[in-house]
Image (cartoon, rainbow, N blue to C red; front, top):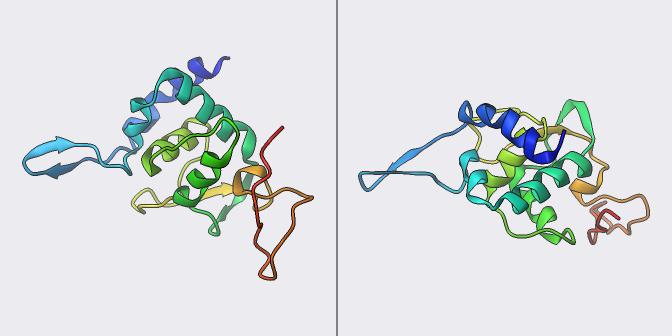
Length: 140
């Protein structure tokens, strides 16, 4: 299955997680809404979903150390990465098979491994005294 086919097949899932708000009497989608994912070009959608499919390792336990907001910044540093909104990133994670711990949170947590490229971790990475990665080493 191609990434485009995967996106099309799982598209109805995002409808269940969308949240719209009223802004000065007009319906609009805010930057945290998963439906913002569809504002990206088809190429950007594929790059982002492929990243989510390959940069994260699924686990049974929820990871509370990383949120969608922080993870989107790691993606932006990826060689093919680019700026995305929090909602666009959340939509891509859902399309990649990662459901949020609590969909009412603004910044979502997912069941992902602590030590995976998407969190900015690499085995050979240098660490500061607090155990945080100093820099992101992108996927090959």
